[in-house]
Image (cartoon, rainbow, N blue to C red; front, side, top):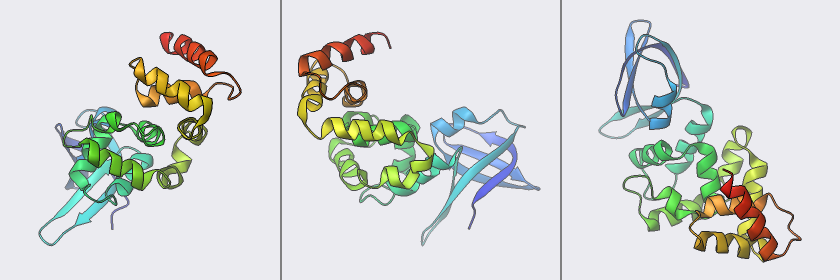
Length: 201
């Protein structure tokens, strides 16, 4: 029903923005990432929107860019993930970060969102691993996601990534670093080069 809203920001707090469009102010729930990107009250704002209609309510959600909106729509298709949980996830992970976490099977990154436990994070990974990149492919670095997916699929790269995780790096960090390397290298060489790159970040 609503594709986007463009108007003047008249109110915002940690979860809500209100945008005046021609004298009517629309209240939208928003992620922390969106709230960080919009300007102060009085500034012109454009948000992509999603209208959730239930028997007892109609809720409008606003997003700074379409990638975040697309991620939100995909998250709420996962069993057990409602709009509030999806907002919580997208408040701690931007679309690219979420896609990387799913590709790397990084449940720890997803459980940083309040109310999201390991089982729910695993369900998100399972249900979205083959859908997320296709759903928001134009808005994320698909090559980076594919590299991470290849790393966790097996071989020397997977072993090197697992070793880095044991050293304290997150699965996403480990998979991204190893994914940049030549796949013909030995496990030891991969670990050494990945550690060097991670130390410089």
